[in-house]
Amino acid sequence: MSELVAALTGRIRASGQHLVVTLIAYAIVAILLLSAYVAFMYALAFWIASEFGPIVAALSIAIATLVIALGIVVWLKVRAGRQERRRAFRAKATVSAGSTAAVATVVPMMVRASPVGSLLAVAVLAYVLSRAGQRERD
Image (cartoon, rainbow, N blue to C red; front, side):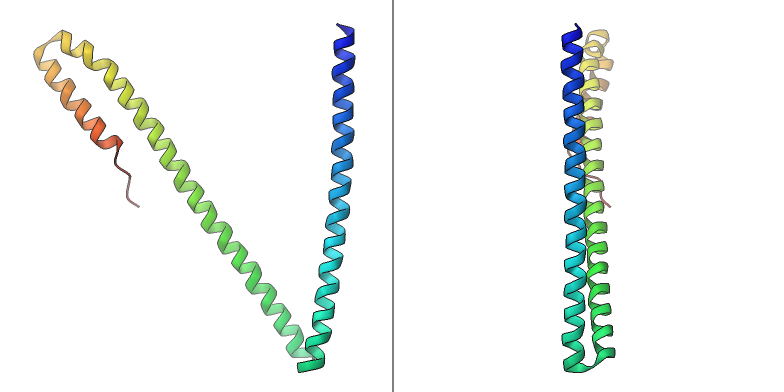
């Protein structure tokens, strides 16, 4: 038993060390990418300033950055809306499948109980099955 615990703690320790090394590597990559981005923006500003002037350079870089950021925000909102609609559709399908299964298990009992019960059971089952395939309109 102690060998098993030692093996597990060794794996956890190795896994933790691997995680720390990975996090440090990604932090270094993020810093280098940020430095490259700043250098690129700096060079772009100098080039635009030499062609059109410093005010146009600053405004054009600011506007371009703002448009890109707003585009990303809009994309994220659209994507979140799609995911929410899919999640709601799946939840509704799960509920519909569950209610269909529940009604299908009740139908035989109602049919055995009485003829009126069987008519009611068939009507309820037909209604549930017809509603299960429909999508809710927004």
